Structure formats: C-alpha cells, structure tokens
Length: 192
Image (cartoon, rainbow, N blue to C red; front, side, top):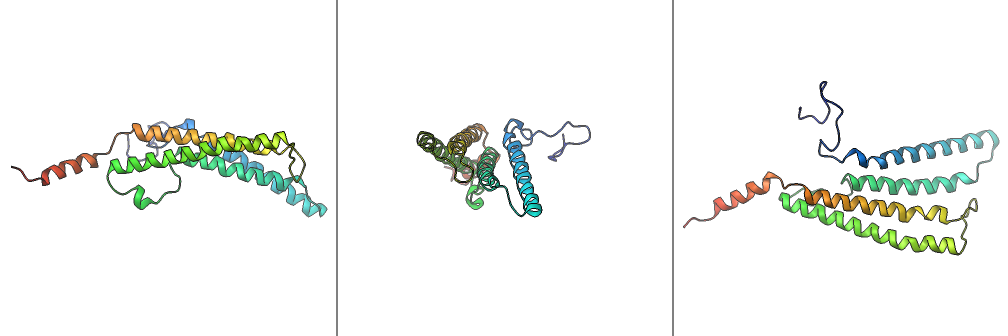
C-alpha cells in the first residue's frame, strides 16, 4: 500500500478511516450540507427570477433562507466536530508530547460535548414555549416550533459527535515520541 492518501491503480477507493480520518458513516453531515446548499441556491435563484420578471418577490424566501443558513451552520459544525476540525490554537494543540496533545484533544471534545448537551437540553424549553404559546413566524405565519425544534435535535447530534470524538481520542495509541522522550529522559539521569 502506498503512503499517499490517494488510492493507487491497484487499490480500492480510499476510506477515510484507513487514512486516519473519520469513517464513512460520519458523512451524513456532508450530504445534509449539500442538500441545504442546493435548497438555498434554488430558493434564492427562484426569488431573483421572480423579482426580475415581476418586480415583486416571494415573501417566504427570506424566512426560509435564514432558517436554512442556521441549520447549515449547525450541521457543518457537527461535521467539523466529527472530523476534529473545530477551531483551536494550533500552537498549543499540536505542540508538546503525544500525551499532552491527547489530553488537550480530550478536553476540547469534552467541552464541546458539555456545551452542546446544555444547548440541547435548554433549547427544549424554547421549543416547548413556542408550541405552548402558539408562536408563529413573522414572515409566513407558520408555527415557530417548526423552526426551533431543530436546535435541540442538531445540538444533540453535535454532542453525540463530540462524545464519539472523545472516545476515539481516548482509544487511539500514543505516538512514539513519548516513548522516545521517556528514553531520552532516562538517558540523562545520572547513573550510580
């Protein structure tokens, strides 16, 4: 097998898990992103055509587009967490020993899991209030909970992805640089 991440002519398709990435089962976020982006493009294009030819616009496009952009940001955030590509300061995250890098990765995954777990739990109350009080959306007048129900659902997905990342980071073996550092430290110790 070659050291290149791309498959050679005799190899099958590259699987992200084999190349140190995430398994293919985590690509649901990719497909959701594609579908949401396509829906946004179609809605916006239809609105532009209607405005150009009729000098008026669809009233519902802005409300739906804002909702889709929020869902897109959350779904893409879930994909970033699943692939361990969330924002961090590389100087601290990539420096030091393998044990230190592992502990920082575990701490980051745990913090993300706790944060989005709290958002999921607390946003259920928002959904319940929207439902209980019969709130309607300002643009087209549909029940507001149709939009707000997705916040706890996607936040729970991000929390689950962060827990999965924490488990993966906990199970992966430490690199050889820790063994080398331990050997180098023992070599520097004075011998009796």
